Image (cartoon, rainbow, N blue to C red):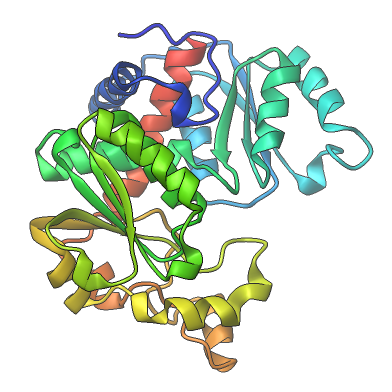
Length: 328
């Protein structure tokens, strides 16, 4: 296993193919131990603080359960429970927390925030999500693909549908550039990343045997192993609702798109939460305003091809692997 002790986990771009492989292999072993009811307690005596400027179900629960399973203690701080960036600067907060804790998780907005925590705290920092990256999610996605597709990652093709500039699409680009699989971002040209970023990651991916490309027509996409979606409007972008629905409604993932885009063994993936029906307060309110914000139909979300809840569970096992590899 690669020696990752004391490292930060800010972006997958900081890790090599072998190091990512090592984290995935550890995640499988820890998942087996969890299923067998074995408590290994690799993190006995460790303390971890979770800083959340954006709320979450999976990220918080995965970090907390992962830490508790391995014997660590956790403190959760949201915006109301901390003076960070209010009465105390980010630098000062980082320096204080670094004296108390063995590791810091941050989930929020700017990538520069999680980088500053790493710079000033003196302890490992874990990125639970920023506006430009989501490395713990992508690690769980890679594990889920391996489990269901039964083929090497470098032989896979992933299609992300929707706002292809968002953090999940960018995280997929990074992963493809390191691991060498084919990544296609499918969405309106207005929401494609800048040309320089695409060319950079495509060049890196091609050096590993993969590719990074973008398309605006479903007719340009076929034979994918996984089709992936995310919500159309992220936290903090609520004012863009009407614009996003107008641009992205043609890209709602339905049965026809799945049949066109996926190969016979292909899977549907989503980082969750997903708008696939109108059973949430947010979807109901949007519908009352005349907006259908579903990025995927209920038929596809609940279909046999959907692996979204396996994917959600794997957040726990991969986050546990990151914590154990870096802190144990």
